[in-house]
Length: 200
Picture 1: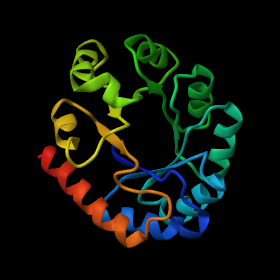
Picture 2: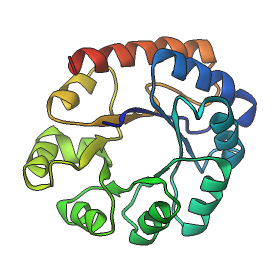
Picture 3: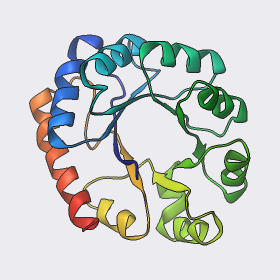
C-alpha cells in the first residue's frame, strides 16, 4: 500500500531537504515535487540523494514523456500526473517507475489500467467523493490502488481510509510555499497519526 504522499508544490531547492527531513522523520513514505515548482528536478535530485533509501521520491504534474525521463535522471521513482495520458504511463513503466495517473471517471480509470497503471490518483477527490470511490472499488480489480488527491486533510483522511483508499496525496494541508520545516513537521506528525489510527 502506497500510504501518504506529501505534495510539495512551490518548494525550492534551498528548503527542500529540511522539509523532506521533517516528512521522513514523521513517517511519510513518499514525497512528490510538482514540476510547476521552482527548479523541480533539482529538488527531486536533492530529495532522492538525501532520503531515497527510505522514502519514494516522485515528480508531480508530469505532462510529457520528456519530463518522465528528466525525472528519472534526477532520481525519481514515482510519476504523478493530473490526467490520464497512456504515453506518460508507458514511459514511466519503461523507466522502471511507478505511474500515478489522475482519473476522475471510471472510463479514465479503465484507460489507465489498459495502459499498465495500477495506482490511480482520484483527482479532484472532492468531485469523485467517497461514495464514488466505493462504487469504483466494486468494479476495479482488487489489486488496483486508489489514492484521493484534492481536499484531503486531517478532518476527512480517516473517512477516506475507511472507504478503502490505499493512501492520499496531501498538499496545502501539509505544506504551503514558504512554510518552515518545523511547521511542516507538526502537521506531518498529526496526519500520520490519523492515517495510522484509521488503518489499525
